[in-house]
Length: 344
Ligand SMILES: [Zn+2]
Image (tube, rainbow, N blue to C red; front, side, top):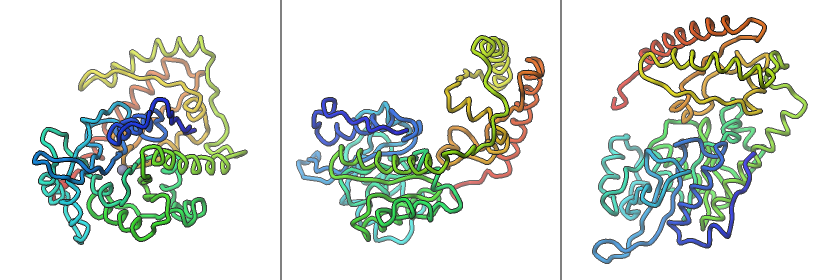
């Protein structure tokens, strides 16, 4: 459940760029709001350039940093006066966009801007957040995503259909916001959310408020329903669970370390245990990632191992070994079947 974590004492009305850093770090504290390395944040400021001229600068999260830990140096800084004319164009390839933006750099030595930079430039507000929150994606990835989001947010929202991030998506978003000055957010089909504000606090509040509304709606919808079916495999008691883990985790590490060494992370939070226990988990887990951004980190599907404690640990090891080998084959086939040269 996303909580509003804003703290005026911590924020101390920081100047805008530091305020952007504070807001970004705060968003990253809740991974249901911003997934690791995902999302991006920005501010538009008036700065003095190397020659003493007043310049409008877009500071926007660069590729390769994570909002939770990023600092002021991790934002790309670009000249808005050079970017604004792009809004009049009809189309740009990723390469044309990247080449163009390279000329708009405000100061040397900053990291490279991401593919989602222009959406921040084209949204005419000082502070902008673009996030992939679990709750909003849950709505926006369903076949009735637009209708559901419209029912929930009404006229406060503009919707854009899914297309791959790039110039066109940024232009669609900018156009929607410019055409509808009274909206609070843009919901992006199968992708995420764009929100904004005049200062770091109002921007953060707006982002969290919209996500909370989506989450409240989902909770309301699932009340009294076993969405993933009845409980099929209740969780083991702590001591038994620990014994199984001590036996199985080194085995898994060996199985997944055949190409290069891997470190395992283990999660038995309440949500995870509830999810893996259900009748329909095998089916639901293979439906595919909820959001394109998730693909980067969790791949297309997880491996699901259908096992009950009554079968014994040796049976679990056999299932893990076969499952991992099969997963690897399927993933390589999937990759080879779909790899394309993006430049075409
Ligand atoms: Zn995105």
